[in-house]
Length: 95
Image 1 (cartoon, rainbow, N blue to C red):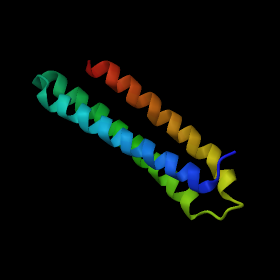
Image 2: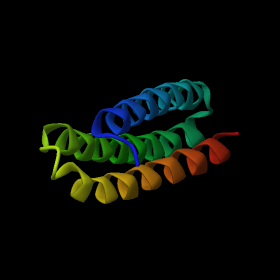
Image 3: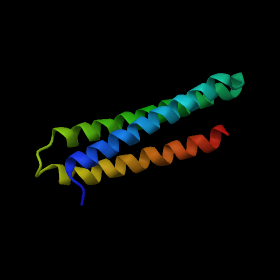
């Protein structure tokens, strides 16, 4: 079982990765044809919203006591999986 600090560090690294992936997808969206560009930007809005929700959950874990963070961990992991799937799906669509 990981410690709170290890968990938070791992989640921050994942956030950084998602930010980079979203930035790359945004660049592709901006370079796309006008018709596809609007759809790509809608998908990016959803990705950013999901990422922000996951970040919010991580903030809850960071501010939780040592005893309470384990209770929040499952919610963070669910939010994380949702964002991971959304990024994978968007990346596949942008190809």
